[in-house]
Amino acid sequence: MKRIILALVITLMAATFAAADTIYLRDGRTVRGTVLGFVQGRFVVRVDYLNNDIIFLRPNQIDRIEIEGRSIDEARFVNRTVDVELGQNWVDTGVDLRQGERVRVNASGVIYAGRMRITPNGTGRTDPNAPLPRASEGVLIGVVGNDPNAPIIEIGANREFVADRAGRLYLTINRAGYSDARGSYRAEIRREIDLNAVLGRGNGNGAYNRNDTYNRNDENINDNDPFGVNGSNQPAPVRPRLPNDSAVGSSVGYGRTNETTINVPGNSRGTDTGIDLRSGDQVAISATGSIVAGRRAGEVTPDGGRAGAGAIFGTYPVPNAGVGALIGYIRLTNGQASQPFLIGSNQTFTTPVDGRLILLVNDDNYSDNSGQFTVRITFPQYNRY
Image (cartoon, rainbow, N blue to C red; front, side, top):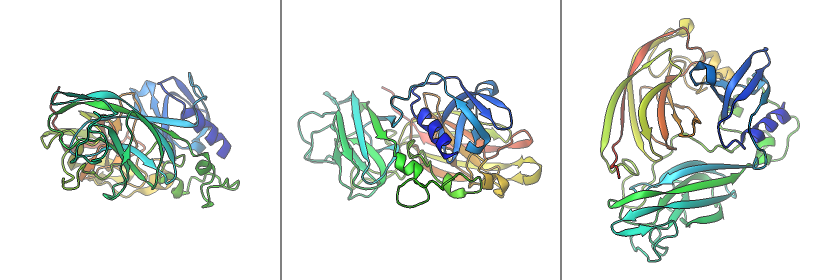
């Protein structure tokens, strides 16, 4: 089973565009759609014939997967692209690095600040008030983790470096002022899949444990992506660019916000909020009302009911959350989906990636649900250039 899953994931990680995939289940059914990734111990599949709904499949439900139009030449690498704008906060890339992990960042694009045109290598001049005063003004910089004392890495247009600690990778532009800036850099983050970590789960030393097999009741395998390749799309702490700044607002919203209220039906597999978010945005969501989450769970609030069997078997989108709880995910511009996250009745989070906010309830069977939640969303208002 381990080798089958590993072969599937190596193939999946090479996907650079959507394709029609076929998933053959052990119960004889066939699912056709697009395999988007592997999240919390389950394959995420967008199903073509269900209005592009997202479903989650456990490895032990699957007999085999046929991936169309994929190359495995680059299978040991995974890339993530983020837009880096000059704002109050560092941009959360959604990439969690391991200590000692090697990562390459390539950057392109232009920002305009006043009358200056700046590229990722900077202007050649220094800014004494910038996050990295001795580096070129406007150069792309990075930092690992949210520790204010963590060393800042000068990246520029391209650089390969080794993470000196474990933590989330943040990027920003090395300039003190940001209110007059427009445009963005596009940064591609390239990491190598740690196959030792993939094969070595459970023995504590990174080596291949041949006795390590998947068990549907083993909750530990679902806490994080065991393959360590997709990064984390869970909200991360906001990191202010300058030490005296407060970690509030959005990296590009400058404190101005919009507010909207929508209804999220209990029987919807995904309600499109119509809100396009950017990496680093701070979003506040509150929810009221109740739904009936099937006959067994009955009426529940946005915080959900008891987790039940869905948590044990990992069939809920967010396994550790209660049935019927309000959850969300970010739908990326390439059609992929971020890792679902719990919202409940009240949640404030930092957007890990650019994309559309989708809301739904935490359930594995929506057909017998009824009712709806009323959801209020506060999100950044942008200046449009």
